[in-house]
Image (cartoon, rainbow, N blue to C red; front, side):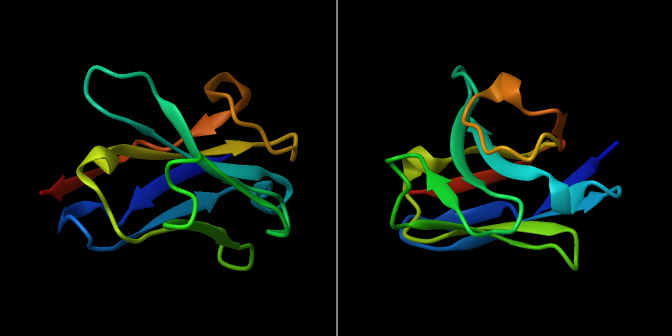
Length: 124
């Protein structure tokens, strides 16, 4: 069992930065691939970024590549999403997710555990 709690969301002006954190409880964090997803009002939840178990491999949605950075600290059971150069279209509820098989994936239904989400609002 993995419990995930996101934090770090808020209101930021376009061009600004935010750092999201996701604290995990449970013994399987370091064995899990981790992902960040987001969902804007009226839209489906979409993949943003993912990171392998040891943090060696990272993957991004094309629209955030070069602006967002996913990282993890297995000693702290935490995964991060550094978001720079934020745009109004980045505004959404951001969720972290764990995939206990340890294999990175991009699909919403491929992740086993989810946090409650944190709101990111970007003003233009």
